[in-house]
Amino acid sequence: MAIDNTVLFIANYVAPASILVIMALGLDLQWGHTGLFNAGVAAFVGVGSYTFGMMATGLRPFDPTYGYPGHFGPPGPQDLILSALVAMVVPGVLGVLIAVPTIKLRADYLAIATLALAEIIRIIFQNATHVTGGPLGLDLVPRPFARYIAGGWPADGFFAFLIAILVLALVVALEYVSRTPWGRNLKAVREDEEAAEALGKDTFRLKLGAFGLGCAIMGLAGALQASWLSVVLPESFLPFVTFTTYVVVILGGSGNPKGVILGGYLFYGFGWTIQQVKSQRWFPVEWGPRIDFLNLIVIGLVLILLVLFRPTGILPERKYVPRARAKA
Amino acid sequence: MTDPILVAKEVVKSFGGIRAVDGCSLQVFPSTITALIGPNGAGKTTFLNIVAGLYGADSGEIWFDRVRIDGLPAHAVVRGGLIKTFQIPRELRNFTVLQNLMVAAPPGPGDRFIDLFVRPFAIRRAEEEVVEAAEAVLAQVGLTAMRDEYAKNLSGGQKKLLELARALMARPRLVLLDEPVAGVNLTLQKQILQVMEGLRARGTTFFLVEHDMDVVMKNSDWIIVMHQGRTLAEGRADEVKANPAVIDSYLGG
Image 1 (cartoon, chains in turn purple, orange):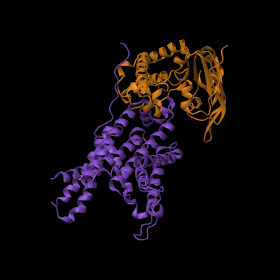
Image 2 (cartoon, rainbow over the protein chains, first blue to last red):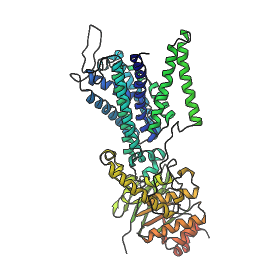
Image 3 (tube, each protein chain N blue to C red):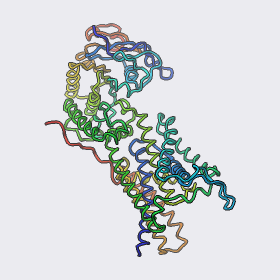
Image 4 (cartoon, helix red, strand yellow):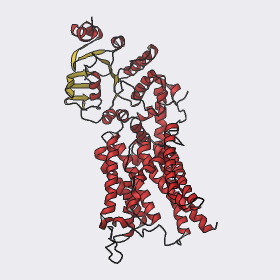
């Protein structure tokens, strides 16, 4: 295999897998750390994707030549770093807005509210034609440093590398946060919210913070996905995305960012391997869809087995044992 | 006489049609062990939960150290120096014993998200101090050997000790204890009472609900009897024991 194909081959695994990992890291903060059941991961990723796409490409008017309905955005293309930041802030704020009225209630209410939100948002993506580009979505979303790097395999390789670095930075940051008193407070809320409150923790603020931050991280994943694919389409944000993210967190080990990374790369690697097998034409072509379904069946099976035999995931949360400080 | 540390005035709380607390007024004085006794359903636990801010009262006032605390959220009450333990231990199961105590430490630099990235070194130093303080409390209640055990693996009695230890970790001035020695063997009971006695000598106030009359009569400075949501009588152990209304409603002949 030549260098170009090798790079493409690796990049096409690393980039989407890393995006999945980032989504899962956001969910791990909410669900793994704080016990908040977010059933609308797809919506927050989607809002991040659309926000980034609109910011990065700028307003597009209706275009009768191609029948493109146009989409909303700032007057011109914006800086990509700024676009990514806005793509984190918008879903973060959206998350806080949905959480404020529901997070004080029992856990199920947040789940129901986010589930409904995800469907509403997806239908808006699909049908608010002149704002989101409707079924055609956004296209020509740029990649960072595109000016300096040749298209094709160098561009894909560089972007995959960039995302991988970002994942690394994010995990280092989250591992740190997880070990601070703030992170411990989140876990206390997960263990027993009333007890945490009775021990002097402002559980409402903690939950709000974790939820908003998690949604912002999901937004970042959405922005990266928009940039990687260069298009944003409404059907990329089906409930399946939410389900997948949960599987990653459960597989890797909820409450442990390192576990979530492992879960993400393993899980994506599995689907990817199946696609590779399919493309080898070892089987008759009409088996293709069967292999796709087989993929889903195996994932479901793995999930059931995990919950039964290793509910803590592959890499469970580590026990915290600091050195003894008291003089014996 | 010194001012009371806790004052409740005409506190009312209903659940559906039941008035669990029905105009309860009482005072607790500093550096005492004050017991709240009464038959099941008298409203004792409900009353403690209202004082701790876990339930809102329908009406009435609660003053802690001359600050009105009814209506404040529970975490704000705790930060003011008033903490409550649970009748059935509410240990954080997947936390170690040490971590359970660390959660209860008074707010430090690491409790605010923004500080995590602004003052990482201050947080590390504060954490070391918290570990040290937690170890001291563990030694005090005799749980040192369990330091790194998951809380879910403790015995029932040890969980009671953990409840007490966690409350002490917050360095409170007033501790509300909901049945601190229920279901605890005698040795452990003695240990719990010793810890309380030691802290009271240094100025901490204890207000407890307890059904074990031996413990109550021997260890409390003041006893308040609650019946049908209000105070029925109060006094020293011998006074309460001799009160015909108390005998009638609770102690029995």
